[in-house]
Length: 97
Length: 331
Image (cartoon, rainbow over all chains, first blue to last red; front, side):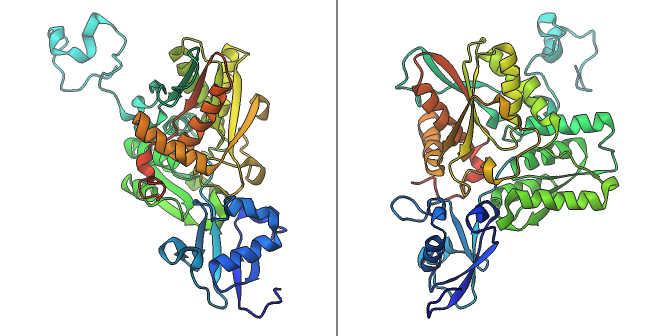
């Protein structure tokens, strides 16, 4: 559990990334924006970083992030604000045939 | 040879029946009227002279234009083979519904062939498959089951297995990941075509791994023709990637038809490099293809650059029209 004063949100981890999160399908992190929540995630699991960010620290173009059911591309991108208890999903592209 | 029913009587002069009797040959012309499913395969092999402009002259880079299949992708081949094998063996009864998990292209091929042959088709795919793909499947009349996006294609596979286990008599489940007809379509089609089109000159074959059917079938055939062929298997660089159709095998269910012994060399491609090559292909070669084709050409170009002489062949898996709503064409 995060020990910050800020609100907690749930990050849903897709199957291909669960090897980095001790096989947990969901991780609770603190954050008021998507960027903060993801930063908290990669702080806890550093090996995840190259999956999500370019070397310049930008979110990789193909990484799909949804807050509840809304794609953040159509909101404020990584600066999309989060409310207590929001569910943030990292959605993989579609693999294989 | 099926003549159109409205054709003139057999005594008509041959000029009135250009289709059947040109040259008096009994073999059908390659452009004679045919059933849709007979027009799958026999795709052109294209030289990528623009992309490969900096290659030394003894090195040739070619791509098999599988996106020109009637269903818009390489998947027409295994889909046709799995359906026809199923009908022939009785595994696919006329009263049954074809069901499978697919990220889109195999599903589009099933749906197209199902429509042409009057077969029922139900497909499970992750909800985040592109809108164009879902609409294409619906346009062919297929029924869709949309699965949890965070589970990817593996989740769609699990869903299909559960439905089939619960009601095995109702469904024909081709299971493209574990059906030998998948790779056999390439062993009997794509592989010999590449051999013939290169005049036996192919030295390297490069393609991405999805169901692994293309890789397994083509390489098995080409290595029988020439054991010195170098087979290069391509995967996305990270578990999370944007190359629809390709698998990162370390973190995915490994297909049963995959034969790791056929691989001479593994390569990886970043999504960013694949998308850059996809844009490059449309703008400099006039080839509007998808990101997996971009990944294939990017890797094949690297292989070609490492050679002093040779013929490198890769696959243009699907048409770029399936991705027009994506935001990466402009970059």
